[in-house]
Length: 483
Image 1 (cartoon, rainbow, N blue to C red):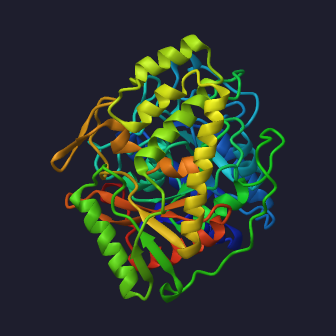
Image 2 (image 1 turned 180 degrees about the vertical axis):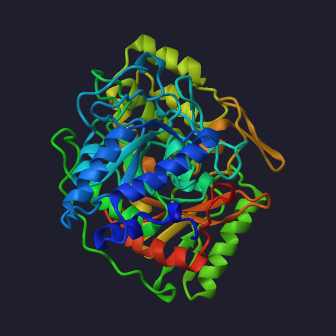
């Protein structure tokens, strides 16, 4: 890449460690690029410019610290992560002036690894949308086409990384929030195994509120290479005294990427009744054809016993049962009315969510048993395949549209949830890790990515497979208007 702002995080770290560049030089380069391009895109909404420059100068004076894997690397963080002394709003107007007195765990880990946390990236209201807009910071646009959304809820993260404003960002994902933006913006992301990475210090929940989301939500990186995803995961993963559900499951050492002829690949080009665009189908078929021609064993397949209508409705049911447990009945009912959750809703997630409101313990337990069966089916499926390739969403990046609007896909009209999250939420339900990589472009020049689903607690091997697939596809490009 001719413009150095698009250097990967891993390459920047090598340059910093070898003395080819300095932390101050890298940070200054990124700040200049932000000054040029952020007014058009609005990805970075808070800049800690002076403190970051002071930290960079201190690091340069000390010299490289090899025990810190991110030494001197400037990094942004999703606005939803609490940062001590830095405004953290979650895009929620009542929190417009909130300044935490403590870092989120992932923020602490990035700092301890030597990163310079110089800015925060935009989110939708309480990270609850597949577009990125809020009444505090406004709308974030897609670097490939500013008439399109970058996705959500880590939309500012993806737009910043894709446009060269940041080499690495840490987002969060409860129904596609690091995967949808990576797909829409043409970059890479990782949704780790559920409970691999602590989420303590994330907003939501609101400061001082009960912990509502005990399942499904994960922290994950967005970057411009698969190597950078692994680099970040090794920093942020692991047990945390503030997040009692994180087990002490160690990450293995680096796994070498296999040759394609040693890989068993399953793929699906549609889930259930929700269609994808013709461009999406073409990109998926081109990708699996290329893998097959390279020697991979490729089969069109899906897990036995997976009925996607059941998966979507169960996710809505369990998600709202968990979230609603921390809300008063009045707020619970108001939220449901706002979102349109009714037992007769046209989409499965909303029907499930309506059942999850004020659910009995018995019904919740039955739902968890139903989840166990689906998880076991996917586990069994992945014993036969190294990776399962799936669409990320029904479409490439959509135009900015009102929340909950319907979307046309070919001759079919689909609702907002089906358009945005239906291809992602099954893996929040099951907890399996997913890597998103760029795979191609629509006829009108918008990026299209793929989900690569792997075995639980085996992210490092999944990343090794992703490197091989990424090398074969060679689809990453930088947005021309940001070069």
